[in-house]
Image (tube, rainbow, N blue to C red):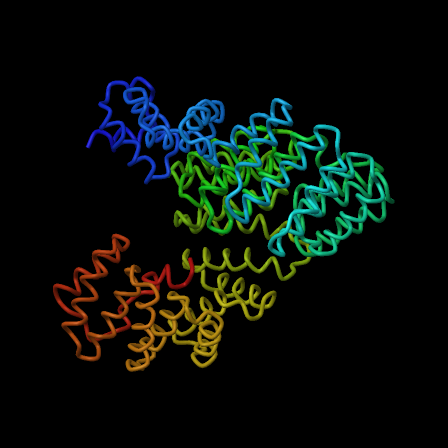
Length: 560
């Protein structure tokens, strides 16, 4: 068991040195399976020192060092990989990026040209080579490289954006403007496209033209910190610098743009490698840092995400966002007190920071501090002068907290307000509708709301469970059983839904099946108070009064 234990502890080189070659290899494999690149890299390199000619160890150590972000070590290992496997495409890419960092443009082109192996790497290589041509003071060839690239339709966005940026800093204003205008019209909600064209217009167009581009983005995605900052500067008469100002930064932008897209679409390993290489070229690239941290969150590595959030520069407009996300990851590590203190400090520094207030309320709600979260969400509500549709969420969340804190009148008012702002929101329809049915009031309207919620989200196990449980509460056991069976199909690992189905089976005389569902529910780790109730049913069966089941049993079903 030692290798697995060590892998979980991010070992030092000394730890690994005291372990056998086979032990290091097993520990590295375990760390790799846990997506712990730092531990995997340490153990693979330790195993490699004991068996330096082993090609598998060498390649695995190289990849682990790359995904860990130890690019200097990855470069050294890449050189060794190429001694025995001279066409290794990832090694060629890494050496090409190192050459870009050192402004060795010809070497960069030679290596990157040998790194292609599919649609994504073809695009990456062409854009990187174009930036090396710009670095060699040959922007014409750079544009030719981009324009010659053939491939999928989605290539066009990357091609026009990077061609426009190269032409911009090469002083080709007219051609740059055409490219950037074209790509902005194709996607007016792509952040980097909007920034590139907006900054261009602030220098070569007019203030009003630049603001129009930024404001178009704002209508679709309001309050993005980078856009807010740029609008403020343009309104003050500033001319924004180019998004990318040299070849190295351009190459980093290629790796960031493609890497972040890959990470969002399931290509975690390649996305991770690209983002680490982007940060090797531009260590303070705030969007690359946030994308990498977001990828670590998706991989359920909150400590790694925290480490990256701490690297976001303090003068970046994105620093506050990083600090808020850092707190949510502290909570994921069960460092809830530290997370709350962190957010309270941010709120003290800026009492109007609604996002920080919402983050604090969300943590309090998830930790069942319902009175506290109601007060916190109230602070956010007080900052909304004229509630609009996007504000439905704060009223919904505050309604949940009021309901759990046994303040139903306040909860009902908030849930109705949320529906007023967003009339067909499925989660609000479900919560309010079920609450009415559970209390035996507004039964027809409540059932109608739940059915509307199910129509919108027919594959949401929690909402389908609500409909089944509502039928149970009004005594329609046939419909209740049908919908609860469907809910269990959709969410087989939820203890509350399995418990509900057990209750329905018991009431319809299917007692053996009820016992099975309750037994299964206990194995799914329900909350302690619910576990006690289920164990009592397993021992004694159900009382005749089916109203004994409390509303508190339904936390997950109601979206709390």
